[in-house]
Each structure stands twice: as structure tokens, then as C-alpha cells.
Image (cartoon, rainbow, N blue to C red; front, side, top):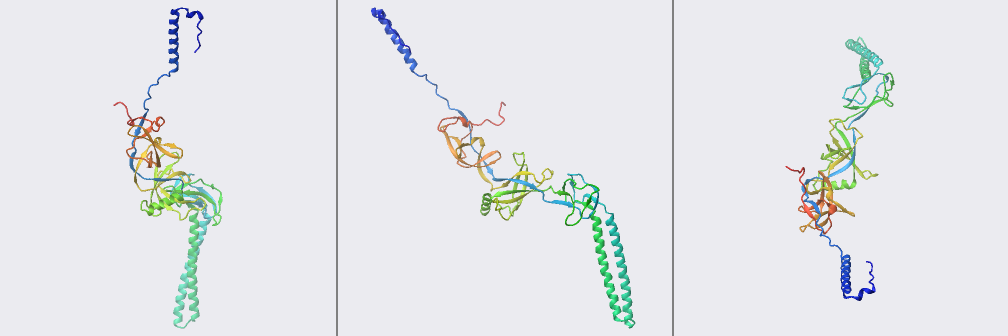
Length: 396
């Protein structure tokens, strides 16, 4: 405030003195009003939405990253040498057991089979001749018309003829197999890859270098492999000893499959294998589940998240993840007490079940937990709690 200078002549009359007193009082009142702060209205308690934890029976699931592999996978190779005369499948098609895939020129093998049949017929004819000569010699020896050595020779000739028949029969079967191998058929049901050899090319049928023609993988059902770390294995083993969870070694425990791009399981399967040792390099145990694939949409090599049952069913309290806050290294929830003041409770969390988070420790069933408006809550301060709005609420 600026100071006021009063002239000397101002004091000369009583009237002027009265005016001076009035001005002094007025200036003092103004100064007092400037120094006194404005009074603020009392702040109202902020509104928050509270709800009690959901209570229901849940089951824990252990989640892993898995890869699908075919139960059966076959490399189709030539079993006889020859020129390809036909490719009888469409690349990438689904084939059935016995479907024709390739045709190799069979003419040389059919000729070899005919030759083997002729050799077999000749060997059988020699048996008939040897049998007649042996019978004749056995009659003549009774009258001592021939020596015993002649009978022995005829018996040996018959046995040689019988052996020749067996040899000819084996040659014929081998020749007929070669003819059969010129028609290459699918040994399993599955999806075939592309053809690697076209018509007119020579393929080799040797056992150690047979030409690869294509490959087939089975699709329904399909295996999914995954690796669990040692801690999960020990946890499940402990639950088995306590009788709270069956072992996947002798029980087809259920599994759930979440494919890439999905947020919840879309398929189910069962465990059918656990390896007999942990990998010393990774400290993990290999597991496998069997998954139905009737629509053939899952392919070998595809990734998925695999959820394996990890506990027996138990009663649990659940909250939405939005109701959980972090306080440094611990998780907390804000609870409204009976006097409408806010209290922080540290909690131990479990997995998500049905979109809600399992709270293992730190929460009571009748606690009023703040589920909306966490940013307005202060520990020890009062709030105005209200229940959540009904789902799909509106005027009726």
C-alpha cells in the first residue's frame, strides 16, 4: 500500500481532525481485509465404485509355449528304378491310405515277372519227372534190377527239383513286388506335400539312395510338444504325492489350447507323454498332448499356448485386474472400511480365471474393494462408495 502525505494546514480545524480519524480507520480496515485469506468451502468425499470379491470354485492352469507335430510323417521314396510316367495327386491335397501318388514305367518288371513264372513252371515240371523216376527205381530195386545207388540218385534229383521250385517261387514273388512298387501309394491318411519329381525323370530305387518323391504328414489327431521348467515339475510332483493332482504319466490330464491371435482356449486335448529325464542344457522336461483336429486347420510346426491342469479344484476369491495396484514390489488393493475411509491391503495373486484375477491371500470375502476410481482414493481419507452399475443398465 502507498503511504499518504498529510499537509501541515490540515491540523488547523477540528473538522479536519475528525476527517483524519475517519480516513485512518478506513485505511486500516482495507489493510486488514487484504491480509485475511479467503475462506475455502469444505471438500466433499470423492465417489468410488466398490464391490465384494467374487467367490467361486476354480482350477489353476500352468501355461507353456508349444509346437504342433504330426503323429505320423512319411517320406515317399522310389522302391524301384525307372522313369516316372504319372503324378497322380494334387500338391497339398489330403490323401487317404492306398491313394495312388506316382506311377513308374512297369514294363521291364512285368517282363521279369513273366520270366519268373516260366521258371517256376519249369521247376514244377522237373519235380513231376523226378517223382516218376524215383517211383520207378523203387519198384525195380525190389527185384534187384537196379542198384541202390540209382534210387539214391533219383531221390536226390527230386529234392533238387523241389528246391528249384521254392527258388522259382521266391523269384516270382520278388518280381511281382517290383511290379507292385511301380505304383507308389500313400501309406497313411494325411496331407501330401508338393511333388519333387515330374513325369519323364529317372528315379533310383536302391535302398541307400532312393529318390525322394514327396512327403505326407497326418493331421487328425495331432501332437503338441512343450517344455516345463523344473519348478513346475516339482510342484506337480508334490501335488501328486499329496493326492491333490493325478500324474500326467498315467492319467490323460486335460489341456487347453490357445492358438495364435486368440485370447482364450479354443480347443481341448489330453496329456499322453512325459519324458523320462530333464534336459541338462535347459533344465526343462518335455511333455506332449494329443489334440483332436477334425477340421484339419492345425498344421505341424504351428505354435500355440498350452494350458495344463495345475491343481485340484478349490474355492477362491477373484477380482478384476483393474482393482489391483502396485506399491513398489508388492500388489495391493484399496478397501473401504466401515467409516468410509480407505485402507490398503497387500495381496498375493494367482492366475486369471474367467477374466478375473485369483487372490490367494490378503483379502476377506466381505471386503469392500474399490474397483473403479482408484486414482481418487487416498489412504486414510474418506470416500463416497457406491455399488457398480448393473450390466446393460438403462431405463426400463
